[in-house]
Length: 256
Image (cartoon, rainbow, N blue to C red; front, side, top):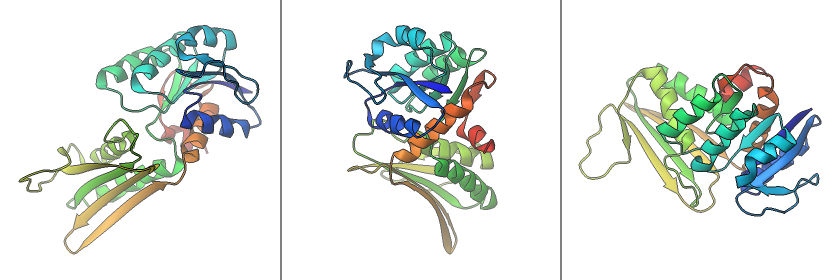
């Protein structure tokens, strides 16, 4: 039995993760926390606790894994608290600064196992592999990364877009990155990155590789956040018992 605690339990992702976890025979939600809505009852009779009570809740409920889909500032504190108590982690929050990433890395390494990914969808993780393969095969083509999300998303470009850029750079070597273009901007050998925000778009990511006389587009479109939730639940099952360190969804998928 894998027991999980969930921060951001009343959010859109939290709600879907609870639904997906309930489908897994050997998984149980033992704690849910949120910055608002303390006192509400979750499926299975778990009462939502205020996010400020995380340490006490983890000590009392003793989960195997903490799943975090919140905001960067809160997530750093959640990660450090859970790691200090020996609770493994699944982190889907995005928008971290380099300093925040360093803090989490220091808290995790040598203490707990953590799966950290800007996108837990199985399809996106295949998308990254396809993009890297295409970039390596079409080295002289111009490359543009375009992402689109709903109008409430705070960080831009998305964590998935940034991970896409890293996959391309890994295939091609270091490249200049240009975020949008304005004015006189003759194209060089850079990777262009563009963010679109509007309506209720769940998440679209496109990589355009353009050469002389042709272009190739590789695209992933998320129709529902349930794709992210099911991946996070899979990661929570996988991470328990792993050696301390930071893992990716690629590591999770290798075990399939």
